[in-house]
Amino acid sequence: MTTTADPPLGPHRPESPPDAGPATRPLERLLGCPAREWTTDDLIGLIRAHEVRILSLMHVGGDGWVKTLDFVPRGDRHLREVIDGGERADGSSLFAGTGIDPAASDVLLRPRVDSAFLDPFSEVPTLVLMCSHARRDGAPLPESPDTILRATDTRVRRGLGLDLHAHGEVEFFLGRRARGDDFCGADDHGYHASSPFVFGEPMRRKAMTVLAEIGVRVKYGHSEVGYVPATDADDTIWEQHEIELALSPLPEAAEAVVLTHWVLRNLAQRSGLRVSFEPVVRRGHAGSGLHFHFCPMREGQVADMRGPDGRLSVAARGLIAGLVRHGGALMAFGNRVEASFLRLRQGKETPDAITWGEFDRRALVRLPALATAADGRPVGVPTLEFRLPDGSAQPFLLLAGVAQAMVAEHGAADLETLLEGTSAARVREHPDDAPTLPRTRGEIAAALVASRTALEAGGVFPPALLEMQIAALRG
Image (cartoon, rainbow, N blue to C red; front, side, top):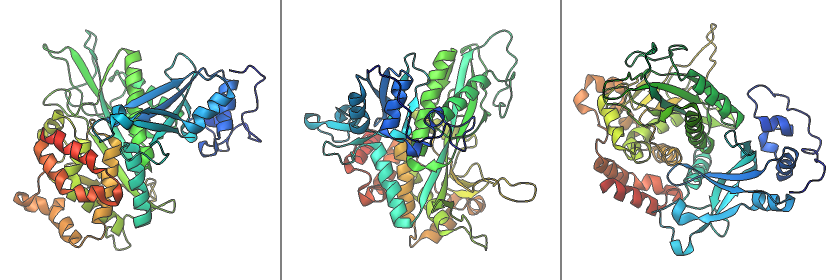
């Protein structure tokens, strides 16, 4: 890299943005403006001024895991080439089984300047840029989960005049060996426990801080109910925690979940703890879900969830209908391991039928209570909660499926009949009529076949990807 005097970080930028505070991303403070205004020149100046030695292109593969491609910058020209142009990669390895021909498998990584953050875990100063994927001709790569989610996000906006925002509740277990002086936790009784009665609180709080610093917006964190004591056969204590993220546009919401897993795995490794996102870590104990909350937005404002008469809005009814009609198919992306079925069979605040209802934690779709101030003024955002997915989910494909389902059922001819037949209140009165969730991989495959038209609509889900999913579930 060049060794000339450090340039200014950007033209005419104040030292800090007006809303700078402890939760602001460090790069926003350093560059003096919000992320949406960052430029390639800003990042090059930052790299030079702060002696960043590695530029890392980070992206999410077909398996839902974070991938990285690292560069040692040779100078400003090299930096500009990588930041503006990205780099090629092997798509047949990144998206195996989706139909990409190994004989012509080059794909492009496309960095997003506004996603930049300093890697909190690298011993060498490293700047990370999150990437999307493109074909050789520069068009978005159809097989990329990121492309699929962005395509359906655009489809919701153009077709319904809405932006669908979401956030995940990331539940996870922290494990360590039991010690003689342990006095924390009781079997499945860890909800909102505080230090010193939980050993994982420091790591959870560190994770929340790191997430805020890399640009992932967090709502809150707490310990969860699923404390699992040590036994004679297994001396590991498992302690359940949750980090609830903040509402974001669908692509950001999916990426936030993946980055949360990445942060937690890194911190656990450094803390000498084990971390697990498995749906169930020990049979008979509460498992970990990955509930998603959804909120339709219109022109930057929350769309009404209900009309003046208290009736659910058209957008809310379409979203609920999409989830109850296609929820079984969405298990292909949201409940991907054998323990997913065990979590549902155990029935510890998990859906036991395809129903929706207010406040009901056993429903597939729940309308949570809205927090209000003492004067009755709402202080939160109304959401719909989808309680079926678990920690095995591929969040990009799952959220894309939810959005496609919403569009498919918006204004459906039988919408009112569907909602009436799956109402939790009605099912409680007529339990034998309750539609059931798939309980085997084969049943999920059948549901996915039935929902293919909805998922493929608008060219969003590539047929080859769905065929791969169906074959894997049947196999």
